Image 1: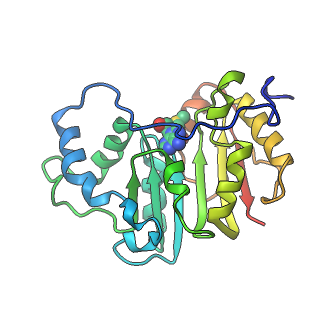
Image 2: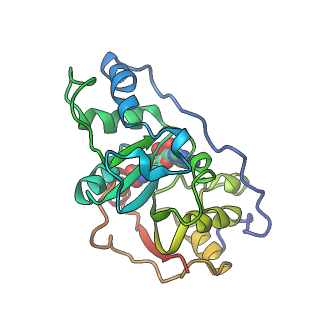
Length: 238
Ligand SMILES: C[S@@+](CC[C@H](N)C(=O)[O-])C[C@H]1O[C@@H](n2cnc3c(N)ncnc32)[C@H](O)[C@@H]1O
């Protein structure tokens, strides 16, 4: 199936910046306190992009990054399951950031409740950080249910994009894993088409059930409720 008239060879290059910080509805006082008092204790400092392991409470054995964590359930679960890894979780949507923070610290303890030492948050376009990370610095990259941008004229906004393969390949070390999940048929076909045209990642058939060790996400639950069929890719950097 061809995803749309915007095939990888005709699609426009991605915009320099896909997103800035995005605000939904007006923030409630608790959300404001989370952003003012808790986020600074978890934020990944841009100044450490050249030495990202230094951003964690202890230097982690592996460095992982999640693009677009949404409500953060997947990032929170990964960080709890893997204390040996340092996870940089990226999300531009403020309400999503607040949702994750609200599960990490109790109401009233935003300034001083302990926060996970192996989790750091980047609240801007993930690509701005990826461009600054050293070569071969990441052991895993997670892209769970990215915005599908199903219209052909919006294909340049898709995170999986011919021009971004090189960026992702540069920051992943040889043997590193790139996990992608999508429930959108257009995006699924698009991923398959783009993977077929590159050689820097192995291209196994996607799984039709969530593989063991992959925490669930909110979008996945919604997709399953609405009878959509997610696909799960586990790519390896060659
Ligand atoms: C469809 S939602 C999926 C959220 C979550 N991964 C899940 O499965 O529940 C995609 C999320 O990615 C975020 N996002 C999209 N592009 C991004 C980028 N370049 N950098 C950071 N976040 C991004 C959006 O704000 C949105 O919250």
